[in-house]
Image (cartoon, rainbow, N blue to C red; front, side, top):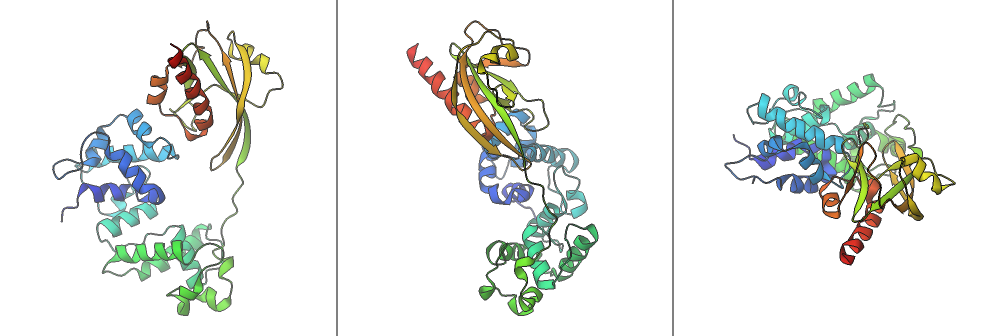
Length: 331
């Protein structure tokens, strides 16, 4: 049976369940239609990474965009443009783990395999009365084996989606809605009245705060930016960032090795990542005769709009755009 390219792409994007609609819509506009005679996966594989990141802009988790891009290339190069159907082959694709492979294999291709995400872990822990830390590999394996034994040969994808939806809508974190749960009569946690305590999860470290001064340095109708080389937000464009919060903004010129003037505050911003919190103080200033330092470049408004800028820079970008738009009107 031939599966259409939309279903193939939906499979690749399973791990982005909450953002799938937005991701698919943005990916599809790369320029090649997803009709019968062309493949969205092939179009994605042929695209430049910069274009993929730009289309992904604002969704966050940019490593997933890179993984998706690489996985599409693997599908084209290693599997003849057809999504593999077996879990072992799916696991070879960049960014696809056990859950995603199980979801694709069962939902798209009818394979009798489990798809164990956080929702399924919660449902299984409560129904089966698993009261050990599910972060322990042996406990996780036991849970997955029990779920595997329940997956039917007929409509395994529907079964997996039903479990995920049950966890998302009824057997929710904290206090579940047991009154409407179809598994209540078979639920160990309901009988023991400890559903709120399950599953037992490994403790997460809170995100670590980092303070930054973000500099909006203008030169005529341009603003200074740099493309990050760090692992976090790699390849994305940001404004100059100096660690900490200074007590003397007049020192920015020396720190940037530029002749800067008219330094003034431009507001505060905060962005929460999975493991970090960026607490930012924004400043705008003028460097009319300055050359861009090594690793930086001055960009026009049109150039800036064509770059991939992370959501963390949203507030700074708003200030920069307003200033550049005003300068464009003046000229």
